[in-house]
Image 1 (tube, helix red, strand yellow):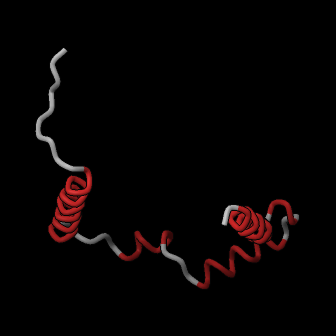
Image 2 (cartoon, one colour; image 1 turned 90 degrees about the vertical axis):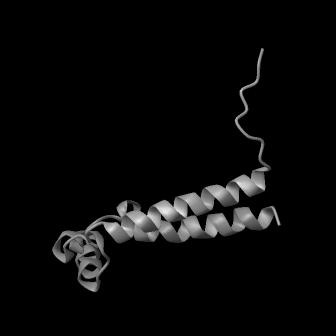
Length: 86
């Protein structure tokens, strides 16, 4: 069965070439496109007002439905789990 290799390139060189191509494409598209309106981005950007509003919403929920409370034990379990493998 014939092999269809286009060009043999060592993996690390290929990764660098792909990085440069991707970076060029990303920067090029960013520079040549119009930026979005600030109002359109407002709901996706973090703000203190959004944090406080969400805090009021989470205050009425039980602890097992509050993701901020659950993040603490998850962080502790993660640290312990990683420490076991060090």
